[in-house]
Length: 320
Image (cartoon, rainbow, N blue to C red; front, side):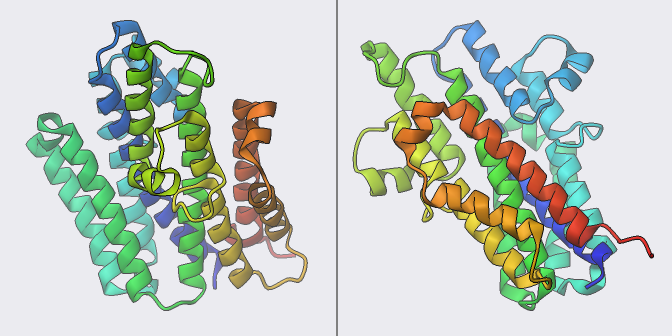
């Protein structure tokens, strides 16, 4: 496969996954902001949302003070923000258009219809009327795109590069969400807490779990009250949790193995080492050494992995 074609397929899926994850993060921030809390705490929550995507300086240059309405506008409909939902859906559609002949009709029509519909909805004011419903629609369109891809595409390199984009982006976003949301909780995870603290913590952790569709899964796996260390374990180490870091790296390694032709692939080696750390890791060891440090290192390694993958497979190689 031409590296340019692989590049478009990889980024088409990556941008669609990014749109979904942005919708998920905005949804949990929106739900959390509805809880009884001070204005300062609410502002910190929205500031954390911008920090997840490393967009706080860009936002402040435009709007100054962090406010819920401005953050949502910036992250949903600002076409100059490359990580906004409208920008991600546009980029996914443009990458799909560039390799239209490689895609099935169903995949292309799904991408194109999503782009047309999101523009119609934003112009009609659907987002402002019901942000929660709009975020659910974005998630649904991403699910539909993924399902149509797996259900209609030939299981060849094109599909594998699309899956690589999806799961590399998912690993990155889950780690960012965890890092910012855990860091936002000031109280000691394991210390004594008042009744009010316990109630806030329940809604806080519930919102985080719901943001990655893991609330019901948590109940099924642990059958217990929601505890921060178990939330971390579920979203980092569980291979059977679809949006966990471990599950995402399993998919990255599996799809890399299907596109690697050389016996010595540095990308495959790095991905395998990162997956091994998750496979054999223990949550008590991670928490003992520091969750923030672990997730920061994980994000650095995922970014390095993305760079290696681009150099090895996606960027056209210069002629000798």
